[in-house]
Length: 548
Ligand code: GLN
Image (cartoon, rainbow, N blue to C red; front, side):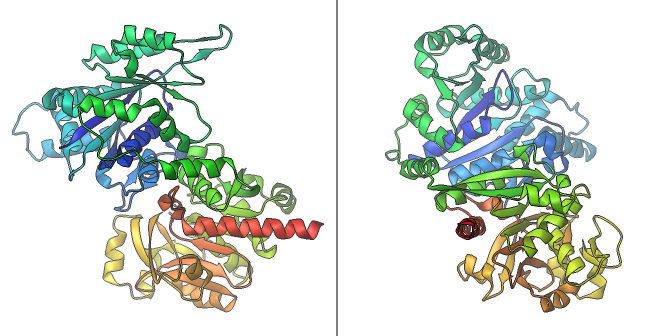
């Protein structure tokens, strides 16, 4: 039987509703329940694909090729499952579907309205594509009180009314701020937020209070009294160092038991959080520190590279090190001096995915520096494409080599498939799958045996990784580059699209066209990240030894 858990947020944004939802799901999963987590985003963009990472953070790509909210990344990492296209919806998409239906005459001349048409469409989404889940956790984006959240709140109110309290629960996450001048915790914002919710007909069953420190009983009583919930249903969600501590904190507070009590159901098995405890223990007790640099364009906003950040944490734990990430703006690396200074104590450099011209020169210089100085280098998507530009310019001496994304060139070493498909036979399947304009989602790649990549992937012959890019490395330059020691270590099934490259005479220089960070999990770190961190540790130790 499906049961729905609706998670709303109040007072301010960025309270960590995604982590709260993922943590609740984790606790229920650890009790043997099948869970699903979904994100309902109230903005008008059809999907976050075209949104600026500064505003929206990373675009998370699912196996089935949807560009989604970064919270889906948390769901996958916490639960070890794959999310789907059908796990994220936006108001833009809902309106698009409704307007298409209206244009096609499906409303038979009726007036199309927010209630019931938009709310029905939201409910349809919540009920869609389910299969035997015990719990569906729906995280409602935005903050209660926002105009655009209203249709969602109305839809979940209706839904709960339809299926009843034994199949639905409202959990409201709020902020209980500490006012340092008064040395007091303040419950008023929570009271107001709940008042707002109740005014539209939703009485939260559980209030989850985010705060810097512990919330004393007295404050819980106040919240209970003013918000009309039992005191034992007021939970604290205290700030923690790592997001991976949150499920353990909630478990200690008894949040999962409370949820099961609400639904009047028994746990399927005893909660087992051993792997979470072990992970957190290792995270706190790293043996040493290794410094790596991430050279990119949105380094001021860590959310823009969320999955990379997390993948590095996972592989740091696996390698027993604390990874000190230096986020460097590539436009700060425009000359040799700046590079030497910024990369002085760095044991590995990662260039992540990206779009557009800004900062590209700094990235090319950085790759050149890593290549010549035998420093571990990991290029992801745009990072690999720029590595190909660097290798073509400096090894093949093609000074004009470039990506057609960045400039017109006689030597399009990276370009759109359409730009060179006539010169080479493309297999239909390959081209069709490319679709509109982006290669999105999971694709297979053949791994070259004997390569470093093959070793990293444990001699797997075919790997599946997720993509999100428009441009491809131009296969026509493959043999020339190979002659200069570049190994094309993975390629698409029909041998047209280079998927990974590495360098023969380098300790660790790998570029991949896909995004391995999207599949890394705390208990199953991605092998490429683990190998990268491992090579950085070895490099660090070697440098230390030589210094002695
Ligand atoms: N801008 C490049 C492309 O579209 C790379 C994209 C990315 O790094 N995700 O192909």
